[in-house]
Length: 478
Ligand SMILES: *[C@@H]1O[C@H](CO)[C@@H](O)[C@H](O)[C@H]1NC(C)=O
Ligand SMILES: CC(=O)N[C@H]1CO[C@H](CO)[C@@H](O)[C@@H]1O
Image 1 (cartoon, protein in one colour):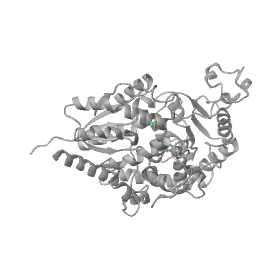
Image 2 (tube, rainbow, N blue to C red):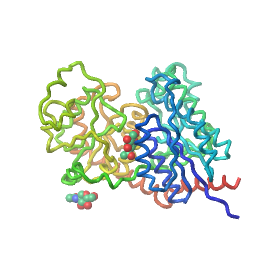
Image 3 (tube, rainbow, N blue to C red):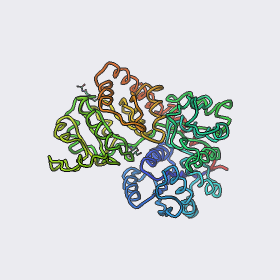
């Protein structure tokens, strides 16, 4: 009997960072399993709509069907200053009717829905059209464990989590230190906390959870997620470690001044500094970072964004003379651009991070520890100087330094205090020059091989994906 192949509908949250792992996942289903894949794009504004369309069409390579859902207006529903932890769930609830109309008219209709933790309202559509339903939060297994366990903590812990004397215990997993708490847990009276608790409860309505990590990277956490005496009895759903799923390099971006410069540098000699597309530093922190890099006497590439708040000293920014071309970096310390002319490369445009990290000259990465950056760094064997700023980044930084041993941590938390120039200088030299750096480099290379092995034919993530593909096929018979 001939049955048709599964058709996978991907519904990521808006934002390039959220979409990229979905593209990678879609590509795996399309190429390894020959499944039809449709990605549904949700956008917050015109700019992101245009940007994501361009990136998707470049990256999907005709492998999938792209459906742009209509832009929705949430201005009446939420405060303009609401955080992403509030906006995203609201956007994803409001998009459900448009998603439903789109699914209803599709032929062949998708048989599987994969969405993020805040996208589970679309499960009602999946149920209506007999699709199986999965969650793919684009974070590590440890954070997913916290998400699953938060509804229980919510009942058991009295008072604010930030006032707890002991780290938060999650059965079978590493405990979470109070200072590392994930942002939505910082204030239990905030709506973003309620949304997060709800997301944790709704995870259990799925048919399974896909995780952008691999068995060998977080063995203890995966074991806990499956163990009926630990988190398994809370989740009661299979987990599929399918990662690391990251972006592919784009050939377009490997030319230009930046790569010409990189090509001239020695192997492992350049520090790459980037805090992702969303983050900006304060004026004072930007200044300290500039001096820290300069003092380290190492070569560097810095993807810089104009600081968010100005320090009181406005005069500082005025009357900066110097190279006309460098006026756009007027917020950097006086004379910085000319002093670093041959050692550093400062850019403010979009750059292909994967291609930079892939270059043999790169020797370290000062990173905010977003999960996709972390995965890219592991796959390229680059040690990290952890500079966590918000969301789950503090948890990730702790895991990278204390569990994986592939990163060094700063003495102060950048989310609370300004990191001084000497501290930055010291940590850069620790990785690039000192003996300690060698051990960290060896460790990240071990992780790199472990990641590659997991994704290869017969590897753990490869097998998890095949198992998942089989459940998609089995669902078609129902
Ligand atoms: C630099 O790295 C490249 C790529 O890994 C390698 O082929 C080359 O031999 C290295 N050069 C030196 C001088 O070690
Ligand atoms: C290069 C890459 O694909 N990494 C992405 C990781 O996520 C950030 C946003 O969170 C994107 O800007 C990067 O492009």
